[in-house]
Length: 225
Ligand code: GRF
Image (cartoon, rainbow, N blue to C red; front, side, top):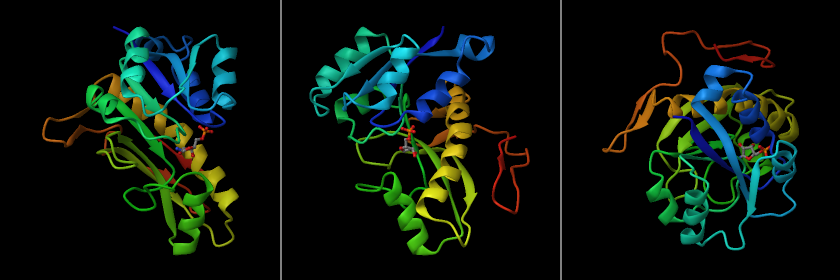
């Protein structure tokens, strides 16, 4: 049965676009697995809502992002089987994360648990990475619980940090990896190749760990193979 996905976004929506491209009906196997059926935002001006409208996907703006009961009713009304946060800047109420345990995901532009938590979003993350002087950052996809950037990790991918990087150049490189990693991770959860066990451990893997993970030494390209 095709899983109906609700994407929550507060910003431009490039991760939403990556998910739409990945599950586009022109790729039958993927389209059979899942479809983005609803885009939710806390901001009426979010670019993601305009993207959804262009694709004739239902949208909703939350009057109160803390109202778990209303959010659950919205998701139930749309028959949502999976919640995918993509640049959503509000906490998801516990009533929702509990109802969607193992079926709510988020993408974060750093290698959690480092550089995560309240206030760690957008350029703040990349400025903290540069300030820390680390030479590898990356992308984390994780299950969502009631704490910011805290749920069990589904997948991560490294992104090299260059000596001349600015927060903007680093954000752009990380975002390209997000667009490659997140749809693959959503597909793996939809197909139940990755599941959240009752004990809280993530079982399965997005990638066959025997496969080579390649990124070139000049740091400009990352190949998810
Ligand atoms: C991404 O960097 C994502 O990691 C973070 O918010 C940003 C969303 O960007 N959670 P976009 O709105 O998908 O372009």
